[in-house]
Length: 321
Image 1 (cartoon, rainbow, N blue to C red):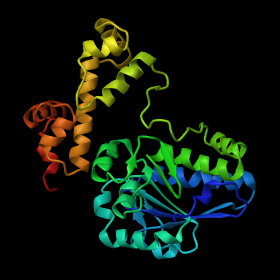
Image 2 (tube, rainbow, N blue to C red):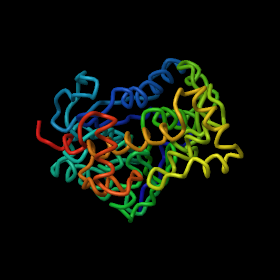
Image 3 (cartoon, rainbow, N blue to C red):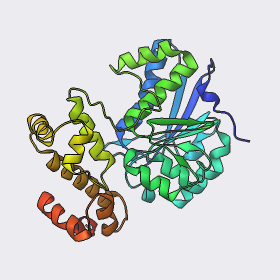
Image 4 (tube, rainbow, N blue to C red):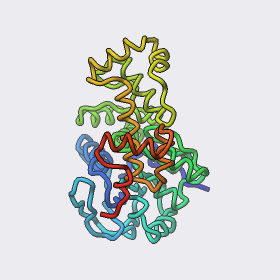
């Protein structure tokens, strides 16, 4: 029987997290996980939250910004921690090696709860540690994780807590998750104090990762962009998009040009090309599949649009450097 997620209940005992940071994770993800605990300790005046940074080889881990994060050791040093959190970003398939996956599988029973941030759920999934659980992952990887691991109930939430597993979709959701943890252990008042320290507001885990309500933006444009993001693989004609928003095509065009200095069609194309470039860089999907998943009728159609936008064909991103 799975151990209960006791870390998300009222408690007076200190909580210790073993935080396994993989190469090419983001410093923002690390900070979003650690700093809420640091601030909670400051407001409480005691060390209610403790953590140790671990890395696959025990040495400093390179982050995406070029900074190397010091480490307290390998996963072997997680002994005694209440929970394990895996933080991963780019190239998780390369940096989460088979020995590391095996070590995660072996060490998992030690912990009352196991969590993951951003691409970290991929790592837990490969270790079989999310089988039968609800989980989330960064929105860019949502479809791929759900397809690759049908045994996991993948949902597009900011963060998910299911029994003794917890996952968050990225840096901001990680902060929301940690604020929720603090609220559960020490009360909502402390969580709000911590949030105020960072001039932010806690978000619910069930909130979507992508925003339909973008600050300082006309809500009609925000909803138009949200629809574009939801239909990358089958783009809506601009007339249909305008109709669904209760606008005329001309009015929608005017709103986009006034606010974003480009037409809605140009904006939608840029979104699709950006998504295609990400898939080409970060996955091994064939270019024909990338084309279909970003709303292009064929690989050649994608290649022509890509060449016009970026000055080189998409195949260049796959060439050895």
